[in-house]
Amino acid sequence: MLDKIPAPEEMTALVGKPLYDVWNKLCASIDEKYDMECLWNTGGKAWKYEYKYRRGGKTLCALYARENCVGFMVILGKDERLAFEADRENYSEEVQALYDAAQTYHDGKWIMFEPVDTSLFQDFIRLLGIKRKPNRKRGG
Image (cartoon, rainbow, N blue to C red; front, side):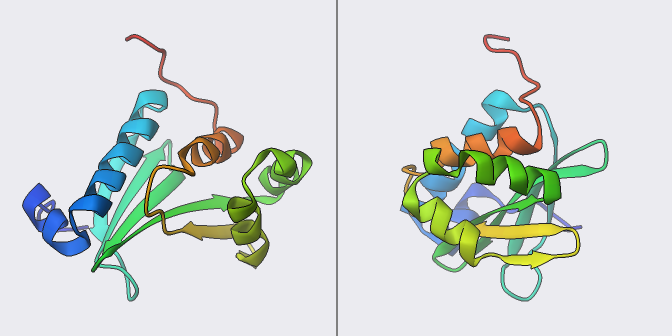
C-alpha cells in the first residue's frame, strides 16, 4: 500500500499530460461499467505506481504508471482464455499480437498493454467483460 495517493500534478509530471489524459479516460471507461474497489500500490520493479480494480478479493485489472509510460494489465485464466480465443477475430490485430506474446503463468495469461491513446479502449472493455460482467447500471 502507498502512504499517500499520488496527486494529479505528480501523475502528470511522471507520465506526461497526454498519457495522464489516456489514464484518466481509461479509468472513466472502467468506472462507467464497473463498481469496484480501487487500490493504489507501489508498482514493483518495473513501475512506480499500480492502481488495481478489485471486488470480492478478485482483481479485474490494474493500471500502472512510470516515467512517460502507462500500463494496463488484464490476467485471463484458463476459461477466460478460451472465451477470448473463441472471439479473437473481433479484437484488433494489436490486441491479438499482445495476447499471443503474453507470458502464461499457472494462474493465467498476463497481458500488459501500454496504451498511448484511446484507440484500444473498446477492446480493453471487451476483455474486462470476459473476466466479469459489468455491474454498474447505465444512468445511475
